[in-house]
Length: 351
Image: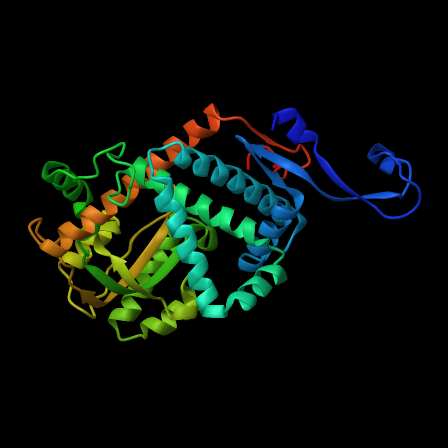
């Protein structure tokens, strides 16, 4: 079907009265639109009914709360439908045995008929507004789409011969991934602290914060309750009595890290700099070490479970990257058209 013909296709139904041309629907109520083409993907089209059905399924899985979310979901559904048809057609163009695909289509239909009964299966399709032939076509598309993806990523399930890429991950590549990810594979030492913060904006300046901290430290040394001092003076963490759990030691500022290295549980620091998010000093803090949790070094590279985990991660990342690249190429090199009324919500600049 030529793209311009498909784009202008409109299915109408005469309701009553003498025959009139479909174009007269704009002037009278003799004709109502029952379906129409909303998108073209290669040599296939997506009708309003197909799109509406997919939108309802998507909304059932991901409910929307605003008109903007609704508009974005409807556009994403259409974009996904177009790409699904393009990849299915790309799969048909590969050297995949058609008889294998048709056998799989029959097998899946027969499995459904065995599970629900022939009549029950047809009734279930009818209740969902799906024609049996449409269901077979959707199954066929799914199989060809899966074969195209297997071809792109080098999956052994590709049935058309040699895939596009080699899926094997070389030992040298795996060792490089291990070296780059080594820090994320270890568990750093963490500490649980009790923190009293004196903010310059509350005390009137750095000198006032330091003077107040010295006074509080003396009271703590004399036996005052750290929790009560937090409640009286601290600018943060009052709701937890100053307790901050599971703080990674490598993330601490140098002065606090130095205190932690030589401290035992129960030790209280003198006044330490209070560093804000910009790296500037905005007061002082007094810290009490409550608990220390030892870290764990990364597992050795030769550990079999680690190598399997790294290989799976590398494979998944590579496959996603390959599929994204090839989908973009497919979209650029194929004819596709989406009705102008289906657009993503306009976003203000800067979002």
